[in-house]
Length: 325
Image (tube, rainbow, N blue to C red; front, side, top):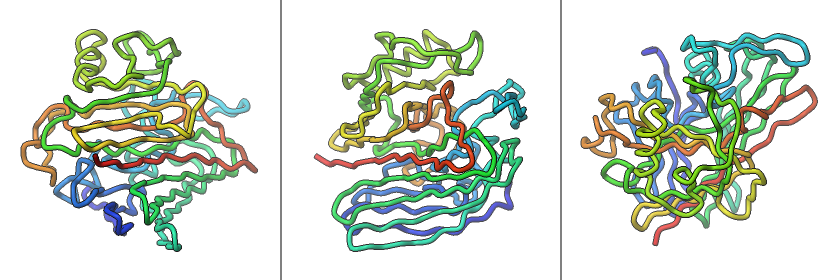
């Protein structure tokens, strides 16, 4: 994948928030608040383009794992099963729009600055039916440190669809064990035996219940020691009635707080724990550090996922509010 290229655009609200965006995968290359890095930022731009861990890119056409074989209205589909496990991960990874370039337009009003990314995913891309028109908008108000991501899609055939973003938050100088997390959800996904495929949902067990703020490291420890789930946290929480007035997810480290608002009905929380040597602009100490970033990915719950049909418009949003105390 060394031949991948990208153009970049900068959004700056001149109120402390700057976001460098990539046309490849309509992705976030870097995000700073008052000069402080807020996400894992790869030092090497070429590595950013090709990294399989999808740093900051738009998950499309389908974030997470969905069965590779199925049908819509009696018409079968066959999605890319790149891991040979019976599921399609993040829309097919390298065969998905994640590793394709979008067209971008910068817009500015008296209140906001924004970048609008657009692309047509052709019928059959990674096995997904329908020509899908994708629009991803990053918007920042000039007077508040808020980054909103808006998704809008239309199709000419019924198709599976669930978009999200794969930024890894890290705004300190170490791993994310001592960050504090709250998730306003009382239901969690359950998994098929010996599988990473979601099979159902259940009331949240006490060790996974983060409606009150708790330490991230304790959550990862529980998952690793008790559930043996791929040696890291990779858990989907459900919002039965999404409340966009209050943050569904909050992440805190010292005096910096990120509040996540969304109209999606679920969020997947994933802690990067590969220990693969990667050089980050955040600091050399992160190169092989375990648990060096946490992804908060609002999305449609996979078992009641969106099927977008011709004549309908897919619309969802994610907003991140940044607070310094």
